[in-house]
Length: 271
Image (cartoon, rainbow, N blue to C red; front, side):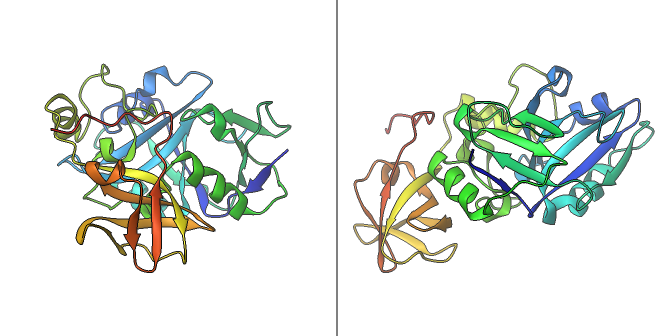
C-alpha cells in the first residue's frame, strides 16, 4: 500500500463552542457540512486572494470539541495569527499542534489501518490522510502522486495575496461552497465565476529536460504565457494562460513542457 509521512504538514486546532460559526464566516467551504468527513477550504484576504488552504476535519481522539486544519506547517503560525484577528467575542481558542501528531498520506482504495484516517475530499485517487500513525515511505513519492493529479501544495504552487481560487482548481475539486452564504473574500470568488473572468489555470505538465525553478517563465511563440511552479522528476505544475494550457508543447528554460489536462479540470471556451 503506497504511503508516506508528510513532515511538511501540520495541524491547527480551532476549539470552543463557537468554532463552527467562527470558521463559517472566514473560509471558502461549508463548515456546517463537515460531519465525520473532511473538507478542503481556503482562507482568503478581504480582497478575495488566497492566503492559505487546509483540509478541515474533526477527530475527538486528537482534539475533543475542535475543528482541525491540516495545512503546510510553514503556514500554521500565520493562519493562527490571521484567524485570531477575527475572534472578537467568539468563544474559540486557536492552537498549533504541528509536530505533536504525525500527518501522512495513503493513496489506495481501501482505508488504511491508522489511528485516525479521513478520505481526501478533493479526488478519490488522492487517497487518504492519516493522523497519529508513523507511516513508512518516501514523501517524494506522494509529491509525485499529487503532481500527476494536479493538486496544488500551498505556497509551492500558489501566490499569497495574489492567486484567485478558480485558477487553482478549487471549484472542480470541491474547495468552494457556492450556496453557503458570505465569507471573507467571497465577492471576488463569485465574480470570477459568474462573469467568466478567468484567464489562467494551474496546470499539470510533463517536463522533458531539466526541471526549472519556481517562477521560471513559460514561453509560447516567443511570448511569456505563464511560469513554472513546483515539480519533481518529470512532473510539475505551471500557471498558464488558457491558450497555453491547450498547447502541445511549451518552452521553459532548457526544458519542454507538455500540458496534461486532468479529467477533473474544466477549461472555459476561448473567445
